[in-house]
Length: 311
Image (cartoon, rainbow, N blue to C red):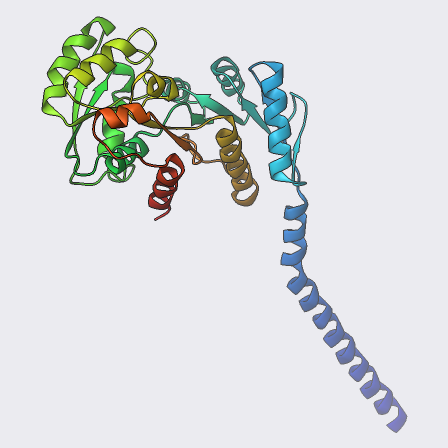
């Protein structure tokens, strides 16, 4: 009988040891699980393809992005990619309507808004300069500025809300904006003559219906006669006689795209449509002198603007 009790006790001890060992193994597995899950997520490779534009530009973006993104993002030929980059509006619209995950590159804001209004949840880097950034550039070049004029068309009227909404714009409260809507292009000259006398400068938005090769002479000569400098909308206008502008070339677009793709890997989603975060500044020194404004280094101006956006 004594030997039977001793055997039973021995079995119970062994069972407790086994249960403790199993518990320790389970705790070890649970402790390591987040590491295994994280490692699996880190090991995921995002495939990206580039569409639209000429073959040389497609190849340039593919090569540049591949060099920026490393091993976790792989550039692949068109078709079957996790993300498709559209370099023109036609491919952007088509890919959006197909329901694929697409990012437009340098697409006009009104074209992006039109596609999204149809219920397609795609995104894009806007074409042109970010308006609030242009206002800050104007303030750096012309301190003491109080009132800025902005011409709008029906297609760009949404920018009125964007510039006046403190959630979207960092426009200082001391800077007043004077908006005037222009419908047909033939009303541009009368609109300029009404708006310019009541403002200190003109913010020219990236609005092809108002600012293009056919209207540059009218806009710049009218503003110069009334001693009202123009900022924006692009490098061509600066060469023709605008004061300055920020701009995002292909290298800036590629850097901004790389940031968006990294965010997709880390957070599982792409940003909402918006302007590129990367940019440069160009000036027309002759125009600065003509308005008796001090010359500034474009790189210093860009650095100041970036510092302001970082805070």
